[in-house]
Length: 267
Image 1 (cartoon, rainbow, N blue to C red):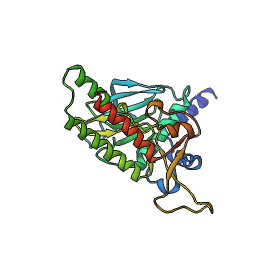
Image 2: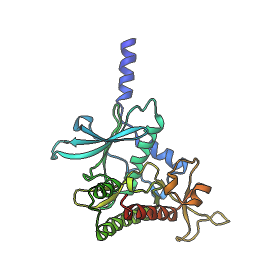
Image 3: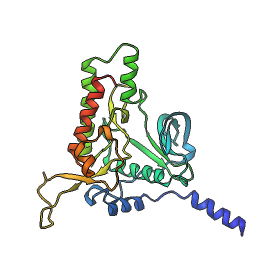
Image 4: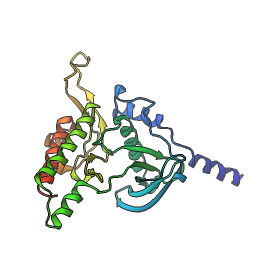
């Protein structure tokens, strides 16, 4: 009986997560709208044996980010970045956040100025979110490193990086998503020097404001997401969003303004 119990517990632990459940939960909870989500836009499962963690790049409240190698059958080996949840049982909110981030990245899709998702590993612990790697690190670290060398980036380079951010955010808003955590620390710079929007842990889908009779207003009606709690980065958040917990594309524009300030003050 003990062996059967242990085997059943192991089998459950190794079961691949069904992202359709997460998708349904986000739809019912208001984090996504029906017209933003599609069942076929779910993260691709990768075999754990294909991912080899190499070195830790950073650590957060619930997990860490690693540099890793991805070797899938028939594909050349390549470097990737991997976000992990260190202990999903002790910090279930961290696991939920990673699952929701994977769902949102799948809906956002590919863009040259948005960090791309390669897939997930949900069979067994720890849970992994596999992303394209940006070798030069965050925009914040790039700016500070240049300043410390007494070789700050030229104005033209800063403008190009900020334009990349604007293009990435325009794609996000075209898909009717708000980032809600736009900051230089959450923007990554590739080896080629392109700046990409990253870290979608707080990103949510936008609802469209309704008229008094309950019908949707015109296509240019305000799009927004109303948070149920106060978790957001204060210094990058628009004052009206701090007061009302209501986030719109305009509140992301405010955060972009803070990013511009960070950029032109060299981090």
